[in-house]
Image (tube, rainbow, N blue to C red):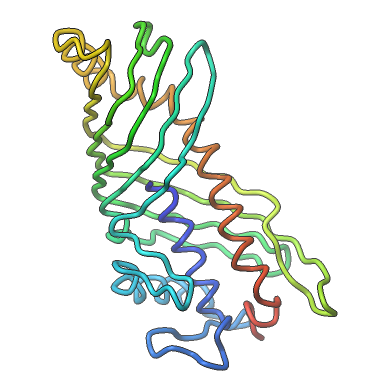
Length: 246
């Protein structure tokens, strides 16, 4: 959802740094790694590509962000609760604001800070266990409206040799997020008992901070894997010279 949008923003600027230097599309421009104004160039590049992320550009591996889809998001068993979330769709990812980018080309360390004003999320869930100290069991749909999201992605790259060239892969990804507010609606809890369903939805929304605090470590862990796999799928296709030209 919101974290994945950060990933694509980050990957976009990487692609713009020369992966298609021989056939550069009109909507892309190159940011060279030795440019003294590298950071402003990267931020501008990420902002300028926003309109093309709405529908995506498949021929350049640019995904659509409206909506952003994740089929198998996560399945986790922790703290006496089993929870599985699939078929996630999120709207609002393309309305990002890039608060800052940090890039250390000597150590291949990158940080991206992004704000998202509003997200609408739909997904399917299965849960069995205790949530906010209440026994919860159900299988159904979940809808969420989230506001004032602030997110940070930290990525560590490492160079390796392939076919006589230097390539880069991500070896570590860390994601953090804070949420200003929002609401959540769960369906089909307690075998469809409408009284209990209304009660748990009321409890969740009155204690949204606690609800998110319990789930956030699971969500972040899952999205870190998505970032790693997606990032490496792109960097594996192009040499370091192509991705980061002088």
